[in-house]
Amino acid sequence: MKRVLLVLLAVALLVSPIFAGGQSEATQKAAPASFAEGSVVRGGTLVAGKTTAWSNLDPTKTNARADDRYVIGQIYEPLIGLDESGNFIPQLATSWEMDDSKVVLTLRDDVLFHDGTKFNAEAVKKVLDWYLSAEAKHVYRSEIAEISSITVIDEYTVQLNLSAPSAALVGALANVAGYMISPAAIEKYGSDLSTHAVGTGPFILKESVPGDHITLVRNDKYYEMGVDGKALPYLDEVVVQIIKEDSVKTTNLMSGDIMLVDYNNSVNSTLALKANDAIKTVITPATDIYAFMINVADKQLQDVRVRQAISYAIDREEVVMAMTEGLGEPATFVSTSNQWFFSDYTPYSYDPEKAKALLKEAGYPNGITIGLRYISREPDNTVAQLLQAQVKKAGINLKIEAMERLSWVEMHHTNQGGELGFAKLNIPRVDPYQQYYQLVGYITKNCAEYERYGKDLVKLLEDSKKTYDLGERKAILAQFQKMDLDNAAHIYVYANSRYTSWDKKVQGVIIETDGSWNLKSTWISK
Image 1 (tube, rainbow, N blue to C red):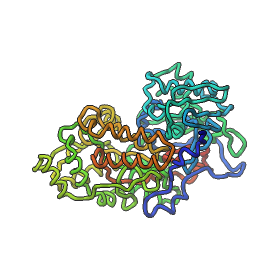
Image 2: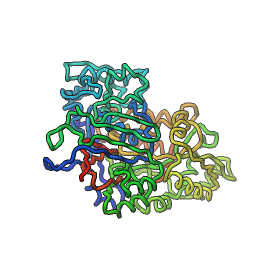
Image 3: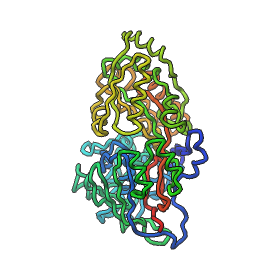
Image 4: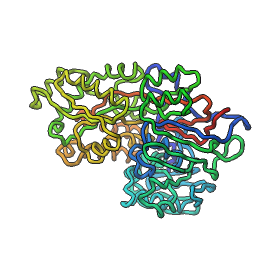
């Protein structure tokens, strides 16, 4: 039976803030205003500040989907778009239809890649064939794995043939797995796309200095029109500077050295910028969930009682008040109450005596000493010290160590090593499959715990894609959550909404549903 997109993810993730005191700010979500013709100002350079360096400009290699989209989202575009409420809308595809065996996409006929080559059905086929190939090693291949082949129907119509139903597929095509790279660039540069990023977006890569800055220039052949009847974007150039220290980034925004920041890492920055009359500060749809990633192959952490003890030893309410001054809330899982698949199941509360009892039962009557590694940034540095002090009351001695981000990712994600890793998971994702898939990569297959529950977690997540019925999907995802929590496969600490800020001279900033910028309609007033 044919289903149109809207049947699929009534999944439109709600983007209203989930925290007390934030509801009135939901209407401040940035979107392009309906500026009168002649009121916009063309030209100029927008200098922005970003806390975390992009992991890779190649969409097949990015390991920080939401953070990287601040940059690569200006260069690349997905087949399907999202509006500010998370509903699917036309992007490079003007319409689409799907059933259990196929998705048929009708494409725009006026789009060129940055290298001047034509975007059409043949291009879509070549890109998706590349994404699905073993050679590409696409980090999000699982999201589009049900595509068995691609058929070009005519120049601007393409059919994705499916090996099985996939309720998550359209959401994947609206995200990184749906980004369109120039096939000519793929053929020419292959594995070197990180330095030769060629998409269809409003900005073209001019220069990238990893860890320092990236410069993007206007795509003169962009297909969307501005209110003045000329092609977007309005800006000539965008320079994104990497500024790791949140206090420095905030000071630079208030002084005018930069005009836009990705998000505020500390509540102090948020409060200071909200009080500044020259700065606009808004709450974005994005939420950060701070959690422990656990190497369940570790000798001590193999025992579920040890993992549960750590969870009971954390005073989440104290963390929330200390780190967010009440703007955040304790995290129960990697979802929030305004999402349709949310489950309120959580078996843990602050109970250091129960933690001690579990450790004794596990054979550690005198407690344990274990390593906790985190990315060297705020608020991670401060949270790690607070957690270290908290769990010590239960006999857990944390040896904390700050690491550079890429080294941390290599240890805890790529190699699935270390002991405890502390990190933030960014939500929402377009589909719960994408949102929860962040978790299963941290469960190593090289241990008894994988056989005990890890492979079942993966199976539940895959099963959640096989039905379009939201009730059935929600039930499967609730099982996934219960299994993850009961086994303390991860330990969730607190959740905090992302706030972003910019100089009030900056107009027309679009904030996407994952919190990242879209600068195609942005301009700077005189």
